[in-house]
Every structure is written in structure tokens, then in C-alpha cells.
Image (cartoon, rainbow, N blue to C red; front, side, top):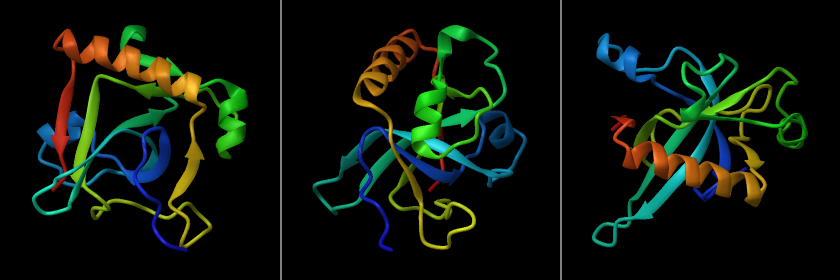
Amino acid sequence: MALPEPRFGLVISYSYLWHHEHNAGRDEGTKSRPCVIVLAVENQADGTILVRVSPVTHSPPHNADVALEIPLAVKRHLGLDDARSWVILDEINEFAWPGFDLRPIPPSRDRFAYGFLPPRMFDQILVKFAHVWSAGQGTATSRD
């Protein structure tokens, strides 16, 4: 199966590097996790696509204002487990697509995406994401 095109709202399997891990000197995430593509922009000069992803985690957010819980129906639609999960919006990883940290979804060896978030939920993420980042609460970690 070919790699998916990086589109807004696509949930991918990715070895996410948390900002605190980056600050501790790590250069690779500790595990693969679902991440939501919140930005994908093509560089007109060389054709590379810059992607920014927000991580999905089971850990409750330290601040509810910087996260959005994924409803159970959406998790089931994506094929995720039934445990509570949140999209964290105050930090992102950014990389040139497809990057080195895109991972297949087990047990597959060639499936890298869970699917798309429903448009209404992705719109909620974008609104909250814009608010968090315009307030200066966001942190980006470059993975290139």
C-alpha cells in the first residue's frame, strides 16, 4: 500500500517526540501513537510538504484548555481502543513528509493511517488549536 497523502484531519501512526523528551536530549519518540495532521503545506520551490502533527494520548491533559477529548464513536470509527484519549494541542512535531518517524499500524506492515476525523471534530480542533497558539501556549519540535 502506498503512503497516504498528508491531509488535514488524517490520523497517522507516528513516533511522536514530546517536547520534554526533546529537551532531555532524545531525538526519537518512545513509542508510536496516533497523531492528527493539523497542517500540510507544500514548499513551491522544491515540492516538499511540511507537516505538523498533534499527538493523541490516553494521559489526561495537564490543562483541559489545550486538549480535546476524542469521543468514543470517533475512536471506534478510527479503529482505536475504547480508553479515553485526547488530542493535545499545545505542542506539535513538524517534519517533511513522509519523514523517518511514520510507522505502520500493527499488525500491518503497510498501513500508516487510521483514517480521518469527522469534519466537525476537526473544525473544533482547529479553533482550539488557533486559540492556544495565538495565546503563545504552543511549542513545536522539528523532527528533520
